[in-house]
Amino acid sequence: MSQQYPTQTQQSGYGEPQQPGSNGLATTALVLGIIAVVVSFIPVLNVVVWPLAILGIIFGAIGLSKAGKVRKGKGAAITGLVTSAVAIVMFFAMNALFFSAVDKASEELDKSYDSTAVGDGKAKTGGAKESEVMKDFKVTKCHVVTGDFGIKEMAIHVDYANKGDRRYSYFVEGEVLADGKKVGDFMSTAENLAQGQKFTDKDAGALVNADEIKDAKKLECKTVKASRTDF
Image 1 (cartoon, rainbow, N blue to C red):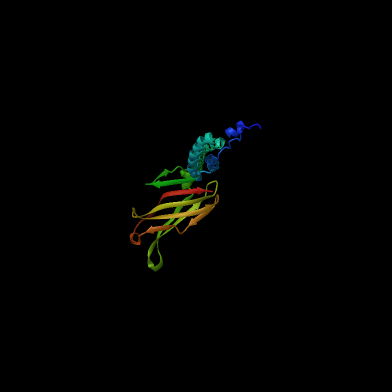
Image 2 (cartoon, rainbow, N blue to C red; image 1 turned 60 degrees about the vertical axis):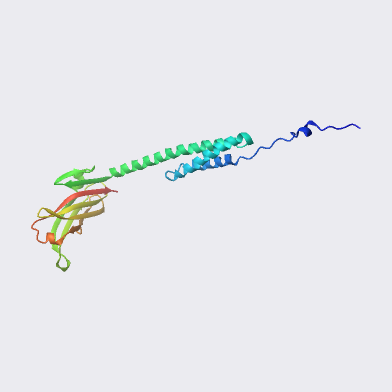
């Protein structure tokens, strides 16, 4: 009876192919990288890109190193590294574009805002067309009147006439002078006047000490600053 010898496969134990191991870090890096890229397109909020991308790079590097041993996850690890790096680049690019757009919008808003300041009798422009703004209003009344309970107070009227080419709202600030001495301030507003529209503000607010104006021989209401905003 012949004796059977084990085959080479049975002797060595190499007949079955070795199964690749798992590489969860590479998969995690891929997921983090993809999320980071998506979030990077949202200005300001994309600050969360940093922890996502950093973790993606760390896990991707470890996963790539492990891929050589377990023969799995190399592609996912590389993709995770690349997407994480791209997310960081997109973070800077999107925020640069966003803040550039904000600055441009701010500049456009400034252009649409006309303001003129007046001091010491000499008009000083604040980036606006001074003559146009100053022609749109005039202080027509600056008197002392007797209010409730016999108290002396200021009555200030400001007439507006929109001579511009669009709707404007106005804001006027000024000083009250008694015999050449400043004794208070006043302010007046006119809202959303159409082209050619007129308006008289009979309730211009004045912060004045009654004792300083009751015996004054000469009262003046001097414009200090005037501005208008278009619509």
